[in-house]
Amino acid sequence: MIHIRRTDLTKARYVREGYVRPTAEYFRRAMSYFTDCLERVLFVVLSDDQAWCRIHINATYIVYSSGHSPIVDMAIAALCDHTIITVGTYGWWAAWFTNGITITQHNIPVNGSALSKQFYRADHYKSDWIGL
Image (cartoon, rainbow, N blue to C red; front, side, top):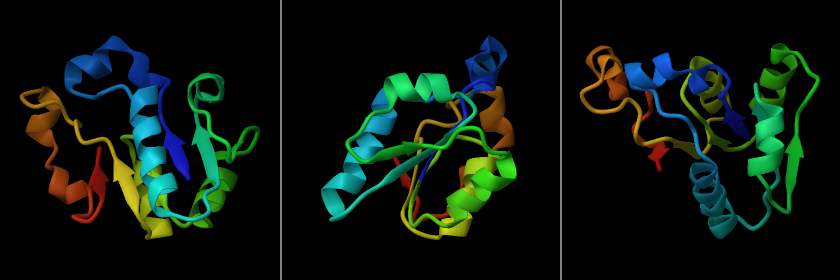
């Protein structure tokens, strides 16, 4: 499962606070991690910006979940084995529910930012989650 939070993170104030916008390159690297180590992969994309995802997140085995409520998307996420997440509690909870391999963005929060002064990464991310 890939959870992509983008719409609010495209606003300049979030960047100033220390959030990092997820990039297509981050998702390509994370997806490669799974295709390199697992025999069969189906990526399910859950996002608040499906239009961006359909342009920038591509793979042979991919399904875009659209038109569902957040509750249904969370149920879909909970049925998945592994996760690729962006910042936010939605992706965080999905990763806890799947309890498989989780890939996160390594560069959140930006060092020295206002967010970094409030956010202790070890409090929010399990030690075995992989930061890319």
